[in-house]
Image 1 (cartoon, rainbow, N blue to C red):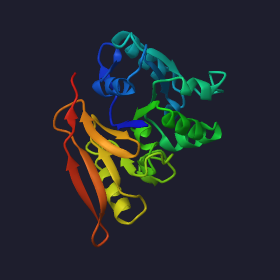
Image 2 (tube, rainbow, N blue to C red; image 1 turned 60 degrees about the vertical axis):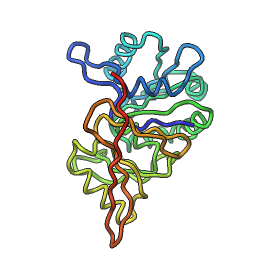
Image 3 (cartoon, one colour; image 1 turned 90 degrees about the vertical axis):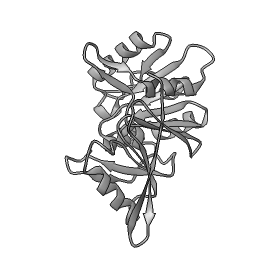
Image 4 (tube, rainbow, N blue to C red; image 1 turned 120 degrees about the vertical axis):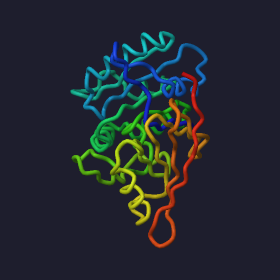
Length: 240
């Protein structure tokens, strides 16, 4: 049972729009596929935006032609006849960013919350960026409801921690996350700077990894006197 929860994955590419980054490569490697790796993209958090799927397919087909890529869209109806069978047949399920609140609501309507837990328990590597990181946890901070960040506390809870991505690039997230952990709204958890991923086996952190230098993961726990204690974790740099 493995999860790679990240603030990265696909990377910007000036010519092609997107390329496969080291974090996504790492998710595929963690699956240890016995044949051609099978990877399913979910862009539920972007309302199944077709351009996002197109960029993902293009990047994977160009950079990782060994991967059999597919996607599961839920708008206007599921694009595969049996979403459960499709997801359980994958080696990696990769979830993109966007609105985690909308993602969670739609997944529950379609029963994907239970299916994804089943896939995780069956050995499919679950991964993703931003909303695709937070969703596996109990909760975190989100801009799903507007530009002012708010807590979300109804994550899938596969990981019994809280989570906040983009810890270094969105200045409002850090103080809000610490306050929510300090007052008990969120349990202790993990935050990631852009370019950092957290590899969990079961519910335990194995290591932090990164696709760039000078970035970190952060352990955030309740401290004395309604404060939060933040501990910096240096990630292992993945090869380009």
